[in-house]
Image 1 (cartoon, rainbow, N blue to C red):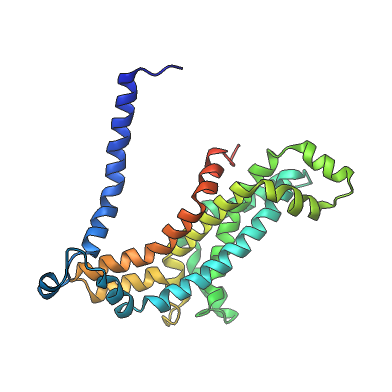
Image 2 (image 1 turned 60 degrees about the vertical axis):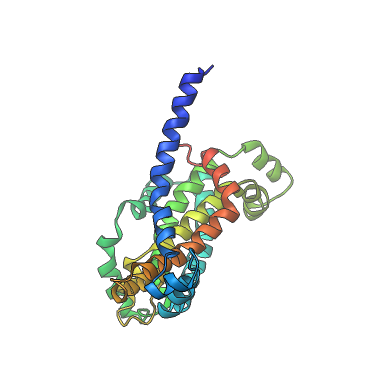
Length: 272
């Protein structure tokens, strides 16, 4: 289909407008984070005050909070990705009795909001002595991520080339070898997309860490930023610098994996 120059110009104009709308909050936060915190800083330093990040890092104790977030994110991403691949392979490559009903049970994890399950989860985990631990924060998020990950990987495995699987079977490959040595290497864009989405949701989770650590022994980065906001409610410069620091790991991971992430989204891992 040929696109006229006028239509192409309108398309670019609309895209530029939406890009500016999306980037405006980011630019505003960065501009505020690099602004002088005090009049003395404005007189002593240049136009960009990078020392604000060091002050926010030290005063907000972000090294401790981001270390906790990183531990939780690693546990959730590793376990959720592993279980999602295996469950997605079982539901996508096989038809067994009750598979459809069991798959709908998995989908309940996507449909039920965190607010509806967090209180009973807290009492259950407290009964087994897991509150105020990394596992109390990570395990509920593993379960929620597996629900979406199973749906995501099942769609991919249902659309996988059956001739590849049959050829591997003829060579004597078992289910484990077909999954990990044949299908998973080809599914790298879908797996990377799942990893990135799971890391982002885990890193930004606020409610579960707040409830599962009532003694505030395990504050994650979003909780630390909320506490920092309470301390510096009048000083938006350090607050903006803290927000940039909390968002930085997510941005770095996306920049490293963006090629596979975009490929996974464009290939349409979700086909049904």
